[in-house]
Image (cartoon, rainbow, N blue to C red; front, top):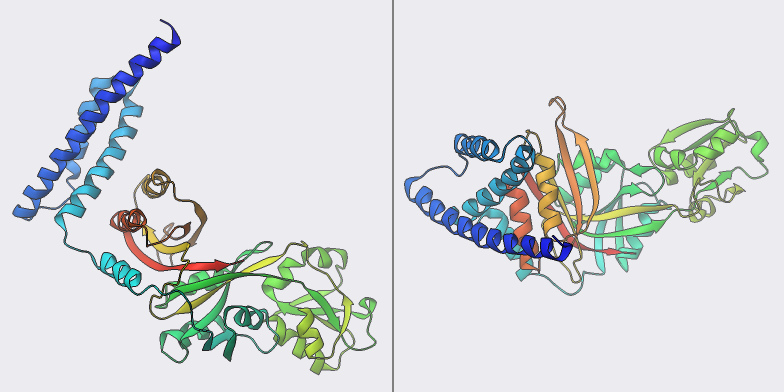
Length: 380
């Protein structure tokens, strides 16, 4: 047969398959009505196992793996349809609906904002990008920023979440499970690390450099070129600059921003010690309750996948089917749970789109735990 004839045959089969799949989903809806009336659960693992055994035996050894994959996906779709028809409006649906109904055009330009660090820290710079007139309350740790927002001390908080060179700020991700919060905005800040020392000092004098651990990692090339210099982590770059200025030591330097070094009257020993010239850190602005502002174009979720083979793949397949762009996937080990992980997804999309809200419910229904962290705008 010619290729055109073979393709025509495939088209005919696809037409028949489409009708049969639609019929199957119609029957699934009837099953859902029956289960709802009788109080039966959605999942019937024995029934699914029997179907898999039957169809793979019918297909034969050559096609049994393909049939297993197709029917496993079919089961997921059917279960999701049953769950949606059997349940009333879910808590997640209500939460999303409320956020959409309260979506505003503009975020406030005046607010009390919690930031980790001291004056001159990068979090201060990003805070002043997000708010025209912020009142900044400096906190000692990232945990303190989360707590200040969660307890209502500050309506907003600023936290770094990832760097283009050093990767994710894992400490912040690990704290996300501990606290109740929502992301309301994010922004990327270009990071320019300068090596600051005392007046009259030179690089040859330096024996120790202090800075935040992320900044030290982002300048690993400098330490490779100067192996005798000790790298000492501190809570943030601004505190490191302040410490270097007050220490009175000519052999001590700090890695911090240009503004930070000028603030503490230090001398620039090297104006660019970053490994990469395009070094950016992404910061998030958090609030206790969910807030949406147009254009809300990014969604973050936190979830725990079902502890069975293929569960993460199935979650990703739902995202793929809708054509939603997954921009980040982060996994963090769960304390006390061997080889189990919590996942963080960042996706492009808006809850103003009904299909995106449906995707969130799909992900939630196939996760052991699911938290919608926010739908927000990312400033460039």
